[in-house]
Image (cartoon, rainbow, N blue to C red; front, side, top):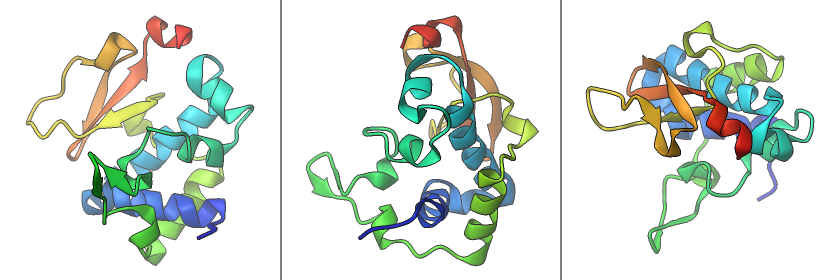
Amino acid sequence: MALDTRELFARLIKCEAGGEGDNGMRAVASVIINRSEVKTGEFARVSNGGDVRAIITQPCQFTCLKEVVDGRYNSQNVYNITPDQEHYDIADWALAGNTDSSVGNSIFFFNPYSKTCPNYFPSRVGVIYNRVGDHCFYSPTNAYDNT
């Protein structure tokens, strides 16, 4: 199924943070925009000057873009999700270049399924910036520049 960038972004927002409310969805959308604008490291090479779609579709970044996880079909993927107007609104907001200050320049996030966030994102490429809902958000460290 061919999806344009807006549709894909709205679906990703719903899949990754649909249960996190407006703040959580804006925070996740902000990470995508931050990745597309970062000037160094892996995401700078992937975005090639700001390509949001390239960031969204980068392999091994979002479980919601995988149809198979651990050898099993992943029914919760972007191809099975129908976004609501709020997801399109947040995608449009982010695609217009907006980001949420609650995550600063964060380019990583994950749900630790714990009440606390680890201080560092795995391999120390990110340091904790903030927690929004169930997700921990991480700003890049100097180690990220070498990715």
